Length: 295
Image (cartoon, rainbow, N blue to C red):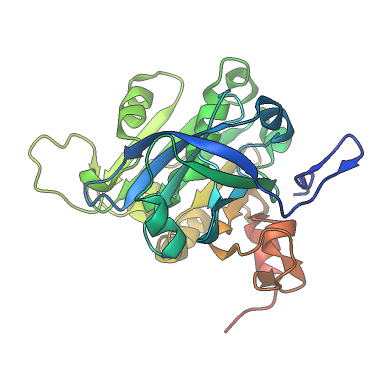
């Protein structure tokens, strides 16, 4: 898989400073989960021309910056088919993300990007696509789903299956959209939770690897799997996909959790000879298996 490397700030022969973020305004803040540790930020560019410069593909990430606090790499949750805004879902885990959780609509911050490569859309045209996600790693997967379901793109892909799980119903992201997708007849939704005592829960109960084994179609030359989630989910999902017959060059992984500076300068995201932020974050499982093991 060799999707083009779209390095931000280099368009039409113009090379701009890759360290300078675009100024954006927080347009809306949505609390996603019952523990309130995950919030989605809807951002709009202060300068309309910057939106055209920020030309991205589903699967890429960006650096979110707050003056005086620092910056963090976050996958882009909006789709390039959604115009006029960017969306990022931020987990409250550190200095910058915690500060962002205290920010409100109208506050100003920065976005640097887009960075990294993206899901191999041209390669997957005419194929079945199985999206497998868990927890808050569903951000770029939301971008992918919105992109594929867009009327201009839906006919490019065959069957679409989505297997998405969280610990409890209250920890699922984008719940309104999940329910909307559930009602459609051009996408197969398999929503699951680890466990619940909610008598009104009408979807699956079980870990993502188990539901993948039960619901995912068999692997073949016409089927790709996109996997993004916590390491433990990925660890137990890989053997399931092997048993279902998925070739490792048809299993697409996102390693966005290894992002650091975003432009390969800090040297903290290397995977063998590759820099995840420049050569990834999207790799096939075959490519990952060809890199030196860390342990």
